[in-house]
Image (cartoon, rainbow, N blue to C red; front, side, top):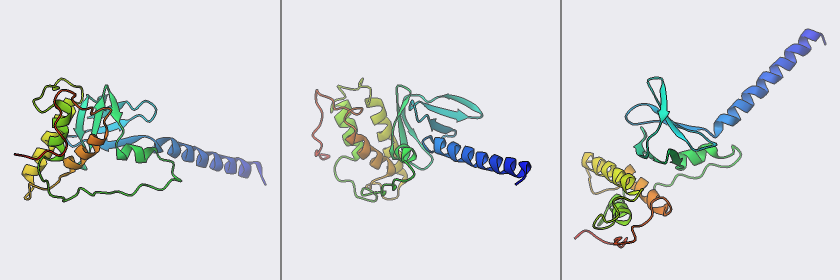
Length: 190
């Protein structure tokens, strides 16, 4: 084998390894388009969320942000609260992807909606915990749910934001309950 053939073979193998390692390092990074424009990216090491709009990258502000696919991402102190998309992006390629379950999809809303229940639990029945850190994001989710329900020909059915509120309701660390007058979760509209 000539020196040129060996060099070419080594170069091809090195390039293949470089591509493989670059793909593996990007597998953990997550990004998605925001509904209002721009692309949000979450750093896999720090969970820092940034948004790129018109070629300018900046820190994504705290709150709940709606993505183009209808899902949301919650930012707290500049870091993303991992959602299903972020968690899937961080999985090892050898692990099977978890099955998507939209058990809420198309389900009728009876009594308070999932977002109304979340706001009542986090902000308090009489808004006595309205200054709680998660009250603002809970209200943002409620506003999204109300907009989706108004735009839907069947407004008494679950929307994507309703499903996000059900997921948020399970996160009792960030979306902690108002200790003063939180509503019972099984309350119904009067």
